[in-house]
Length: 419
Image 1 (cartoon, rainbow, N blue to C red):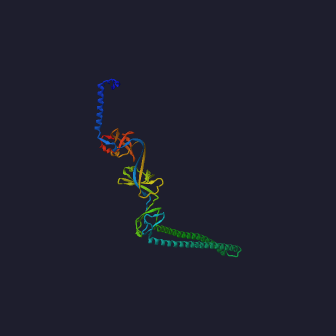
Image 2: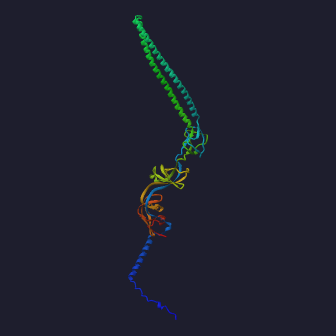
Image 3: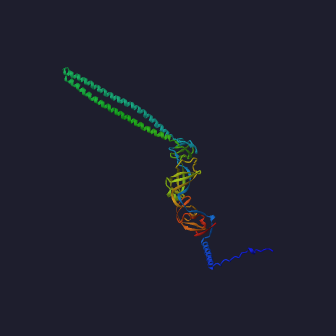
């Protein structure tokens, strides 16, 4: 016969009956949890998928307050050359042509100025001849006056000798007193004439020097006039002030222009700068010397603010940046450049990634994520940078905040975020 399984069976004791009090407690806990879950669901405005949101975590670090600005490369030195005098202009260059410093770019034909220069040059040559002749005449006048003075000295010596002989003859009784006195008077007369001749020689020399100096001053004045006219004639040739490229021509060849008319524009490619447009809200923070970073061909170059426009155009302020280090090679005028202006650095502050949801509420509210519930909390933001914003109050380190997509919440106080 087939043996059954009775030998394998074992008698089990039944579990003791649970107290009804614990059963009611368990039921009450389940009811409370269900009520809280339903209450949380009812208090939220609805559910939003987390894939439609972008979250940021509050951290601590250094905040560099900056702003991005788009700009373009411009020539820091781009002078426009003007006609100094009226006349017919002959252009020597074409637009886009490279020229060296001092190269003749255009030449102005001014017959009146050329005639005046030649006329004054002839007058200068005439005055030089008159000055040289005056020098000869002055020397002759001095020599003549000196000869007369020397002759008077010789006459005085002769009169003195005659007076000495007359004195000896008078003492010996060979000469009358009247003749003796006449010789003495001749000596006195010769002394007077000699003294006047010496004085006259000095006066003649001074007079000759004055006349010669007057001729010399006239000559110098004429030389200055001719030098000024030579400079003006040389300015008829319009020269390049530096190594540059001819940007644009304001006239066509052989055009008659008036004095002060623009002729052409040069572009000095050795001195390039970057003009950037900064939002008007940052105008008070702009100042000459402010540091900046410029992204050019994938590399970062240091710069600084060199000049700021005094006016606001289309809610933008124009600022000019110059390179602090060596200027990068291969730059082209009007090339687009992305710049970053560095205003200040705040160390050891609470940081939150920047997002449109923070800006939408004016920086006063944010949605903090607690588990599956996003709660609207009041916050206070401080300085902002391109990528981050400073958290002054309302959030702590490690808090997860909705920085993008909060417009789906419709300003609700609580929203459920689902996976």
